[in-house]
Image (tube, rainbow, N blue to C red; front, top):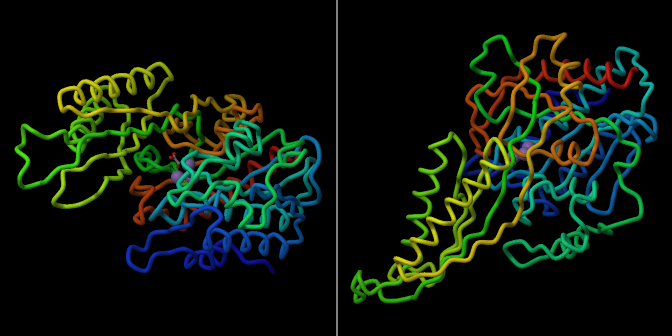
Length: 399
Ligand code: GLV
Ligand code: MN
Ligand code: MN
Ligand code: MN
């Protein structure tokens, strides 16, 4: 008997968990994430599934063998720095458990049915969200991706080689895949405000982008330099963070500076440089353009006042995604599940943009908290998610 949902969940729990925060550090191609990749392959093989892998670290485990009109479900196993247990792994573990449920019911798919794991969904190591699904679908070229570097200067190409992954090949793991369903923990509070809705269906994903802000000034002595004589990039950054917050609040949009690097990072020196990353999201591409345009303009004006300089570089921009309305309705309408948008990015968005008919199921999150060790979901809701996914797969792969 393969492990059931709760046993799989318990076996994953220690991998990459910080003893101090209880959060997860599962960076792509590093030890914990590679352990998870092996865990997935062991679980697949214990079920007699056949594995197809690409040279980027993406994997699909097939019930039977791959082929045309395939239906694939899955998610990711990497985490943000100090992330929660559910973001990603819930979709993978639920997919395996849903397959078990279908097999126990004697279901035999008439379309190939697979469980996928895409690598570096969070972009937490190389900065480009959904790197694995972008490479698999051709949304980013190998030439662009290979030289992206992590904080230690290690390139994607070198990280793949260190993990014994061969990089590009002539075929894609997605060849023949026409339908993709991703189950994911909800990363907000839409479902919890509807007590009868443990499961929701995604209508689409807000466009979002990541932008590197490099503020430069002049290093100087924290004691002897009069305030009016400084060119302090920290001040320009701080005022920019305030302006971004204010601007996003005006239209219920999102603007976050979650990562900052200070040079030389010394308590008694005015810094010479501050690099900060803006994550911005809005409900339409035009409102996102407007939001990031206003923030950059205000930052530039502030830099002129402070005697500092600013360079802004977009690192990763993802357009708006509308999931197949027909598929969402086919899944949600008979079951009475709500259809809701999300401002979180997902591999499902990349696959949808690549022309694959795509849907997402969300499992209720009682606090709405995500990208945090405090992220949680009730076991009863997770098990409802497995049932829901199994029903959806039976519907889609059985016709
Ligand atoms: C990933 O989860 C993101 O939306 O940033
Ligand atoms: Mn995430
Ligand atoms: Mn995720
Ligand atoms: Mn995501």
